[in-house]
Length: 358
View (spheres, rainbow, N blue to C red):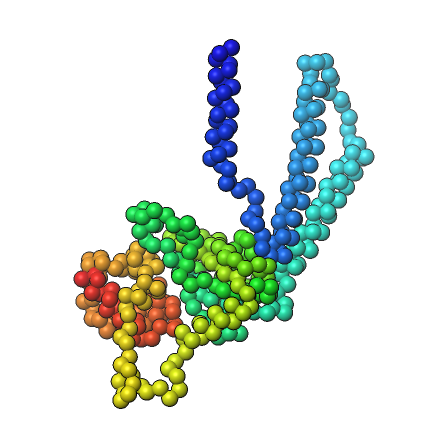
């Protein structure tokens, strides 16, 4: 009696521990923030419910027959050949079930593919291992890289709240506007995927695919590359920040100001009355653009600080390194994949990496 009570108590405690340990575990889709997302979520629930009913009916009938009509209780197997009524029934019923599933699925799929009349179009290009965003109507362009510190990835520091799901520059979109996404890739296959926006589209080199979303409420929505694209595949996060239309216009103005040239009539650098131009910051450019590959020595990139890897390259002359970095070399794209960099910034970055690797 005591042993049985102890077992029961142990089972209760085990259940309670499991409930606490897995209290935050999700077994369904993430909360959806778009109309298409809600449609996908509802469709998912309907299909699961239909499958559950089919499972209960089919396996219920099967186990009932196994238990109640077994040979040990005296039942004899019936011998018959063909039954037109049964064959018609088990053909028509599945056909009607499939039609019932196909209608909402087709309706949702067609709505998901309707990219007509967008308010905003953004071209998304995947690279190993970052994303480039081109706002086609706004003339705004930038790269988005993983911003999780390498120390966290290498278990030298505690993981942050958004470990591997944080970037240095977010995609910003206005709430309530239809955003069309054009996807392509500059090297290998990638896939742009944000679960809460119910948007996922392959990015294929040489092809342009499209999809769309309309965010219902402000917030930050995170996703990742969903196509195995190489060793750093897990380090290609996506962060979409949805803001009000006024905030979006303000953000666009700030982005244009960052890339605008000197104001008209400004004295050239070094001229009388003009300020001397600040020297390019090679370290900052390295951290923003080059670190993704050179910090870990990926895709053939010599790891910064690795004298053995850099010595033969330095021996070819610094001008050769400049040319490779500016025009591209092997798997490294021109200017590290960032056409907005000036040659002076690239050279300063090369100087910083060389000095850090001797």
